[in-house]
Image 1 (cartoon, rainbow, N blue to C red):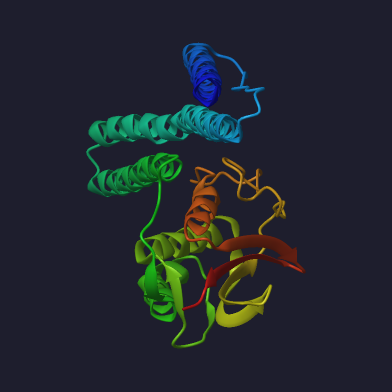
Image 2: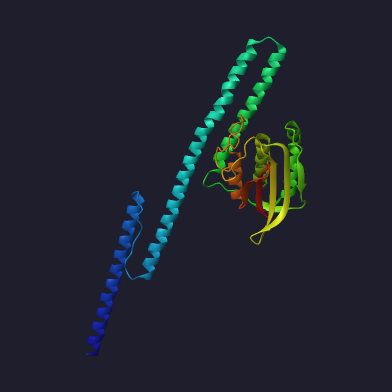
Length: 302
């Protein structure tokens, strides 16, 4: 009698185990079928599992997290691809303009026998070539920093030294544009950043002063606390030109605050600044204060 009971219990257990195994295989097939469907079709469908198994529910949730991450990345890649294509299309005009003028000045230089005229046209041609080179270099760099995989190597950087060295390299340009910079840079400030990125940021900000500002320019670097964290704060301000820019739009692509002036500006210099600051986990802001346009950069100190 006991032997028969044991056999019955084992049979029940075996049947139960077979049922569990069959249920698991069924769940696995269902999940695999849904994953294959999602992979092969453009759909917002997610993996569903209605059983009581916590393990399979967790598996379905993990797969859905991967699907969400993949879709978000795909959307971001598509957005950035469209942005880059739009950038190239819009900048084609900036490229054609100096190319067209180059042809005209070459023709004028070839038509004249006056050495002074030839020198004048040669100087203009060189300026147009420099302008074209800068536009192309800016365009290529913008496509680079706009890539979804773009990252910079971060380290301890002497922000004070980089700021002063970069400003000094533009000494002749400040004189050319009639600007005497007021410099107030606190020594010994180190940040968590990338040296080449910081140099590029400073170059773009200084060039923005030359293109859109006038007379007065001020550069300030100091430490300041924000949200209970210590930052190095770089402020560059200059007297406004004929039109005040919109601080909420200056970091948008192709935004040119002073539309009444014909300047060699692609309109993406400050957009590059924003992307580089973001890559270094910093903050960049703009404001119009009295008669000055101010851009303020925040980077984490060491």
